[in-house]
Picture 1: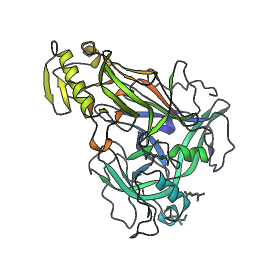
Picture 2: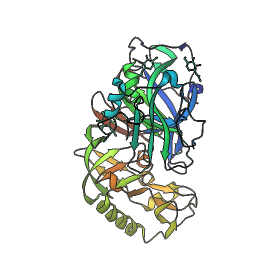
Picture 3: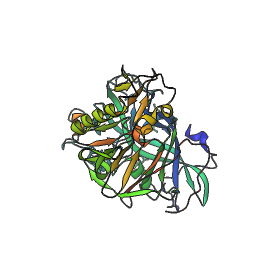
Picture 4: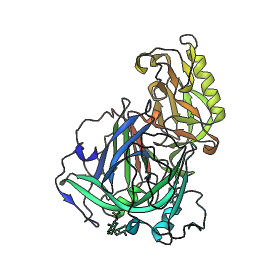
Length: 399
Ligand SMILES: *[C@@H]1O[C@H](CO)[C@@H](O)[C@H](O)[C@H]1NC(C)=O
Ligand SMILES: *[C@@H]1O[C@H](CO)[C@@H](O)[C@H](O)[C@H]1NC(C)=O
Ligand SMILES: *[C@@H]1O[C@H](CO)[C@@H](O)[C@H](O)[C@H]1NC(C)=O
């Protein structure tokens, strides 16, 4: 997929590149909020393609893996599992890399090294939604096309450390083979690209199309003007612009809560009391024109059939998240979802216990929005944009 997207001019295997000016990589996205539930990239790792869920809410990149000599559960992703060559691709528990990587995993036990497999760099990652992955850190190549205004596109291959996931829960079929961790980790995918001089700046941007697909970029990419920039804060491991007040049609709903961006979450999550108040108010505001219906896809739905959200969105009021002095506007299409039965549902759920009192801004709310995480200047930004991507390579300039 990625390799077909732009012409490959040279095949370079460079471990230490000269830092080139304003370079970036851009990958097309596949997937959708509904019915896929994921936005993912397809990347070449160890010479084979793997589909990875882009996740700004976690640090570790891992893929389904068959680890020789270990009891791995059969894999459920679209590609054949990754098989590391253990004679030289294993990262050892005592390695500095393993120690550093463990710091990127919240609540990872201090002892780090697994007593039963003392030579391996074990990891365990648990997501707020309840899923988890277990395995070992390995070291293999990833190939990316590097773009820059001053050079032709070039294919670069670097070694990077990632998780070989043996056991994933729940154990069920998935449209992805693993996760691309885009959190602010010291040993995350982007940090490793920067350390190898593939890119100079740790800046991440994603544009999720409302029609499915879109694109992801990493590095110095041209930015449109008019972006709403907010100082980035760190809260409970996530990217956040800070506390936000939820508004429905301009009216306050509940009290201020910390709002975080998480591209690895399909829907948007709102903590208990604010959630109940929101559901009550939305139901009330459409009760004269729409009829409630039970749909197994989501908990709060209204009866269709509707051919598209566009046809029904006028009946719903806009939402907004008001930060200290900036506002994120959330039009109805960014909080509603159309189900397989063509009913329209609230694409907002109640924050699970593990997520505490956070508002988690998920994919549904980031559709047709360019969202930028600038880890250099510690800013997060967003601007409304049509994300449906053609083969256009945007013009770029240094930031
Ligand atoms: C693993 O790597 C070693 C060293 O490069 C090589 O000799 C061996 O054939 C590889 N094994 C497999 C199964 O690819
Ligand atoms: C991965 O392997 C490459 C090539 O052998 C090596 O240069 C690099 O230091 C290794 N990285 C880790 C984290 O083990
Ligand atoms: C990612 O890594 C950074 C740096 O180690 C850490 O502060 C942050 O909490 C981690 N984020 C997550 C979601 O684990």
